Amino acid sequence: MIPRRIPRRFAPYVFALLLAGVMTLVVSGVVTLLNVGVPPDFVGRWLGAWLTTWLIAFPVLLVVRPAVHRFVERITG
Image (cartoon, rainbow, N blue to C red):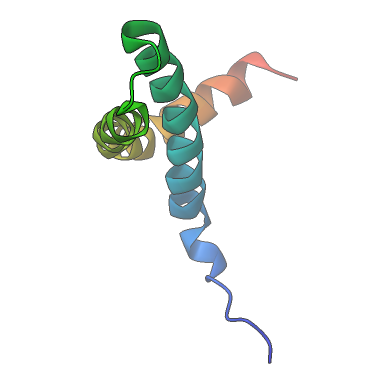
């Protein structure tokens, strides 16, 4: 059975979803670790911080990505 693929027209949204998810997961983990150390509820705190930051980062990335892309095109090559 061939798995269904997401249509290419959704690629910018999938990209933003994954990039925001990975980046906020790493950054929120580091910041949580620096702020609270490793208490017994570390994973819960980390995931709570991650969800909050991801909910902010995903829409921000959707909005700023086109402008950043244009800027990079202007300053490179």
